[in-house]
Length: 105
Image (cartoon, rainbow, N blue to C red; front, side, top):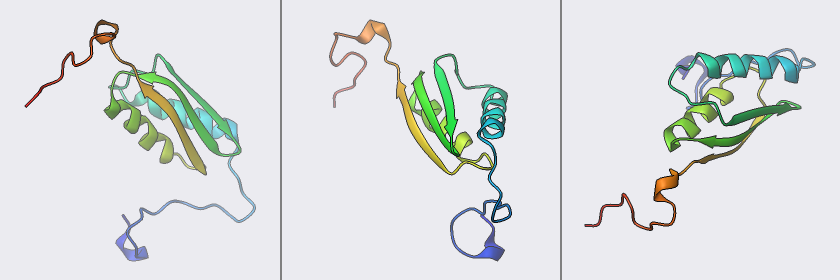
């Protein structure tokens, strides 16, 4: 947060009025950032960019990774909006066994 600019929203860089970053550059930067995040399992993740809108598709092992990927994408310069269609993959061993792994109090 940039306290000198006021407000609670983090400051985002803004280019000149007629500048729009290309989808290819956004995709390249985003994929590099995701790859550098060593703790993310990206094997089943697909990333698309159209007119500055990032779409995330596929599955991840847990909710933390789902939202961490979203946060990384949102921080890339030029991203105008983000659509997160990632879902958390459930282990096959628990399918068909309701309540497996749940704690009841």
